[in-house]
Amino acid sequence: MDQCSRKAVSTPPGLGDCKAPKVLGDIVESIAGAIFLDSGCNTKAVWKVFNHYLHPMVTPETLPMHPVENCKSVGMAQNPQKKMAQKLAARNALVVLKEREEAEAKKAADDGKKKKKSQTRMCARGGQAHAKRFTYGVRVNTSDKGFTDECIREPMQCKKKAKDSAAALLLELLNKWYS
Image 1 (tube, one colour):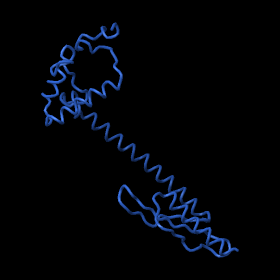
Image 2 (spheres, one colour; image 1 turned 90 degrees about the vertical axis):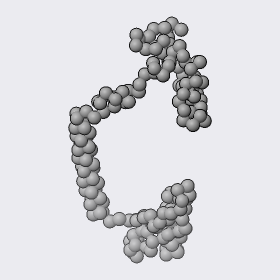
Image 3 (cartoon, helix red, strand yellow; image 1 turned 120 degrees about the vertical axis):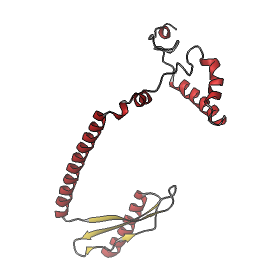
Image 4 (cartoon, helix red, strand yellow; image 1 turned 90 degrees about the horizontal axis):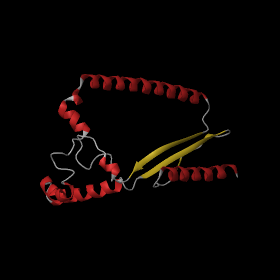
């Protein structure tokens, strides 16, 4: 209890430097939320239940305001310097994105100069959010016959399986050609 007895002057009794386990806060928060919802969003009902336990330490009057809410109430959230900093950060982010885009375009141009040996593309994507289905097509550039027809298999539940399925079909085609 010695650790909890050392507290700032403006802090309510018992809330000083004492650190409670996170799980305790989660439990209290869950109970308060359940009471709040069951009472039809009535904060007075929550305080009625918790007042007995928290009254010496916390009351609605002594409960400290969240720092963000405090800033909003004081007017610091609309500070012109903050808006300028946001604009500057956005401008800097755009510069970085443009540099990345140019680097990727240059890399793609360099890769285009090299002869591509294979191509993979997503042919279709469908299904509901909880049951997506992917269809991929794959083809290769052979040294004697050029590019193969695009090999496409049935839709799969994940991209990797769809690519693997299309690649397996391509291997079957190449085995027929060269056996």
